[in-house]
Image 1: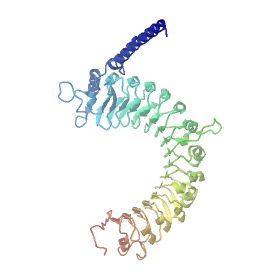
Image 2: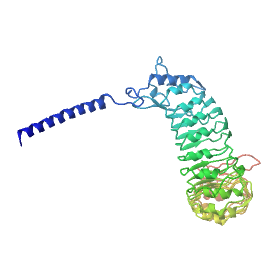
Image 3: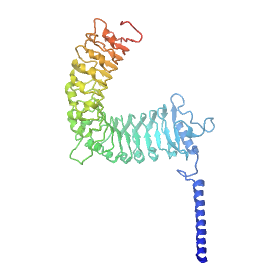
Amino acid sequence: MTNTFRKFMNLVLFILFVVGFGWLKTTTSTSFNHQPVEGGGEASSGKCLDEERRALLYFKAYINQIHNDPLPTWTTKEEKATNDCCKWQGVTCNEQTGHVTSLDLNYMVIKGKISPSLLNLSYLERLDISHNSFHGAIPMFIGSLTKLRYLDLSNNSFYGTIPRSIGTLSELRHLDLSKNFLLNGTIPPEIRNLTNLKVLSLRSLNNCTVENLDWLYHMSQLEELEMDGISLGKADNWVNVILSLQKLSFLSLDECDLSMAMHPYSNSSANYSSSSIVSLGLGNNNLNSSMFHWLFPLTTNRLEILDLSRNKLHGIPKYLGNLCSLTAFYFENNIVPIKLSDFLNNLSGCTSITLQELSALRSQFTGSLPDDIQKFSSLGLLTLSDNKLNGTISHKVWLLPNLEILDVSSNSLSGTISEYIGKTKGLTINLSNNKVEGVPSNAHVSNISNIEEIFLSSCKLGPRFPKWTQTLKNLTALHIAKPEFQIQFLWSFGTCGLLN
């Protein structure tokens, strides 16, 4: 190697060393001495900022205590409690910047208005003041809290209209305005801009209206939707809108005037993927059996919970018996007479295997409790009280392997109670206000029954005390009241031995 080439290589190495050292110094200085802080400024080690502490104190000044001070830790500098608002009740701060990011003040028994000082909490991501007594209009400035991802104003006393500015909260994932009974007017069309929403609850806003549901087309991320109490009588094609929400798993539309919608579904429109709904509530809508043509596309094998209570349905279609994931079916307060045997027959597909809860109290079921009940092997709860049942109780009901609660009270069922009652897995049995008679003999009644509580009020048990109940070894309470006395006879077998 020549001297000239050796000198050249030494010069190159020296230059690389100088450049590398300068880069390392700059990088080290940037990394350790000038760390970037969210929102600008220097790191605050999580201690709250003076401006935001003052904003919280102004917020407190807008509220009134109902009993004791609901926010005793929120104090001024002159007071002895902590001045670090990041340690105040219901307040959460960013650990690096000290900015307030969350206010959780639900169930605090707070009464008052929302203070405009919230505008100084410009990094607020979560605001939950639900289940209090806030009143006044929902302020327009709520739309300026543009970093909000979670907003819950439910169960308060807000009145007036929902501000259009709420549509500027494009980062929202969760919005709950439910149970503010004094809110009125139309749901603002700007709500369509909340394209990131996963949960939307407008439940029990009975004075609010919508002309259509087209704004929902923009909410492709929606997973839960509650609009109970809002009239959808003018919302044509609302079923098609719902079917477009491919991530929707929970839908509750109780008391929404659905029977008034002239054209709820058009099967000639664009092809939609099958419904993803897991829980569907359509109660108290004055629906008759014509609804089943549009219910079909909403019910797939994903459906687990179905509520059709408080309607006028002449039975149910057979396709409901093919819902292989259905675990709970509520058919309460139906005012049209239906034979129980026909009802059970239409559910006797794979639904009969998966169904765990069937509640149809205060309806108009007729006939007996038939042998077909044995097909419903997963039933844990069966409630048929306050119906028109007038036959017998099949002994096979006592052999259901998972039944824990049986209530057939206030019917006109007759016949003797089968000795198989001793084999039931049930914990609570209610046969009150029927014409059934006691078990003829306790000789064959099992003494390993799980029954803990049994209701036999106004049944035909006499003239002697029903000693067959003594064989139910886990029994702790026996109810044999007569309605004319309006008293309840409760026998605790753990302390009394009078049946021996």
